[in-house]
Length: 120
Image (cartoon, rainbow, N blue to C red):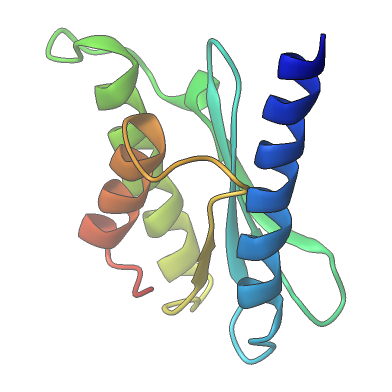
């Protein structure tokens, strides 16, 4: 039982450490990522008020023949969020990975957002 608690504590500490770095910057909104087993969600949040400006889910991405797996869907979700953000004149954000390690679907989401035109 103690192993599970240690694992949760490490994840919680990683989440707090990354959030402290992100919240220091009030001039830009933050791009917050949530990863579930099936989907990935991205929200752009105004740091000063704490309100969500826009969001996207991988549920919203229409499947195409060329999509292979969750990583491709995450990449396309990042691109779609970047397009929505650029339409609302949001060009620069701070990336908040919510304590997740920067690899796999989280990395693909961030790269998709960069390719779509957002600057981190």
